[in-house]
Amino acid sequence: MRKVIICLISLVSAGLITAGFMPVTSNVSAEETTGVKWYSIEEAQALSDKNPRKIFLDINTSWCGWCKVMDKNTFMDPTIAKYMNANYYCVKFDAETHDTVTYNGQKFWNRGAAGQRSVHDFAATVLRGKMSYPSYAFISKDRLKLTILQGYYPPDKFEPYLHYYANDKELTMTWEEFLKTFKSELPPAKSATPPQAPTSH
Image: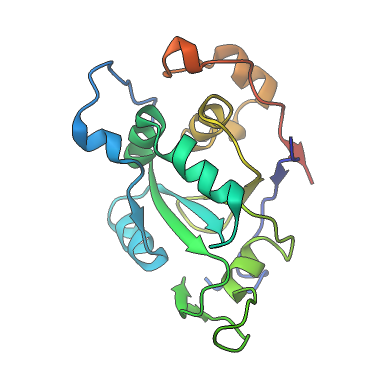
């Protein structure tokens, strides 16, 4: 399992100028089986400005096989999708897009030639140049700090991280303490051994 990189950073210095568990019932509606609702980074910021909520950023590429597996197995899981939609503003970001994006008033773009495979400045800044796909960023409500998670995670391994960061548990308890109290909302067949502890850097 790839290491989890936890970083508490000031996005200003990095060049980026700048609630309770949701119970899930067994009756999942058709609307909730469509997966995670994705926004653009600009839409997520606007929504968070009106109703503060952490932003979840999925950094991927069109050629990444594990990104597609994550989409199919984890982000389409009804329990995972329902929790993410209720607790985060979720953004799917192509690390090689040539679209210009604005984050906290700063514009970011891809410096490579059109049609060329090159890394977008926003993805490179968020990941501190450690490009690996898929990668995920849990961005705080004030958008001044974030946590990075990298690699493929099936639903049972991904679910604890979603709860840990959505509820700011990383501020009050260790990962090990959190896992002792965590109760999965996934059906029993999908629950398995807990993921390993995050590694601080």
